[in-house]
Amino acid sequence: MKILHLKNAIQHQTMYKFDATNGRAVDRHLLGLYFAGKFTGSVPELFKLRPFYESDLLSTSQSPLRYDPVIGKLSKTDPIGGGFGPQREDGYGISYFMNEDKVHFLITSFRSSNETDSLKFAHCIEQAVNDMQKLFSPSKPAASNGAQMNGVGDK
Image (cartoon, rainbow, N blue to C red; front, side, top):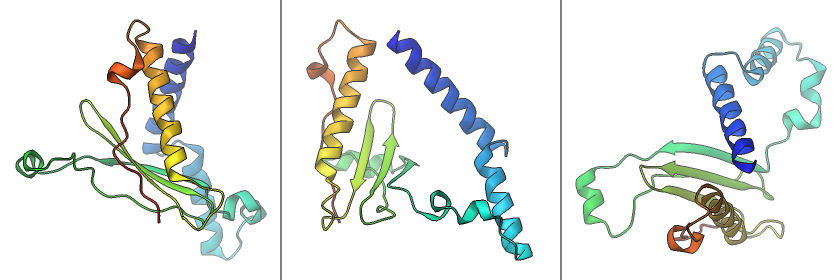
C-alpha cells in the first residue's frame, strides 16, 4: 500500500511540474497577478498576507550534475556542482543533484540559529532514503546499499 501511495504522489508531482512548466500551475497565475498589480500600482490584498511575503523555511532546488568526465575521473570525490543558502536565519537551503546511480544533497543552514542543524537534517534525509530502499526491495537490508553521507555544510 505504501508503494502505491508513493507512486501516486510521484505521478501527481510530475504532472504538476509539467503543468507549471507549461504555464498551467497555480503559482504561475499568482505570480502573474502579483506582477500585474505591481505594474498597475494596485497589488491585491491577498499578497499582503504573511504567507505571501514571508520567505520559506525550506528552500530546495535541483541542479543538473554536469562536469567534465576527464576531471571527474581525476577526482577522489564526486563533483556535485554548486548550492545556495537558506532564505532566512531559521531555515535551510538544500540543493540536490542526480546522476545515474546517486543523489547528492548539499544542505546549508546558519550555525547561529538554535532552530536548525544541517547534520541532523542530513541524517533525516539519509533515514528517508533508507526507508524508501526497504520499501522497494524488502528482501535486501538497507545497510548493504543505503544512503551514505559524505559531508554537511553549515554557514
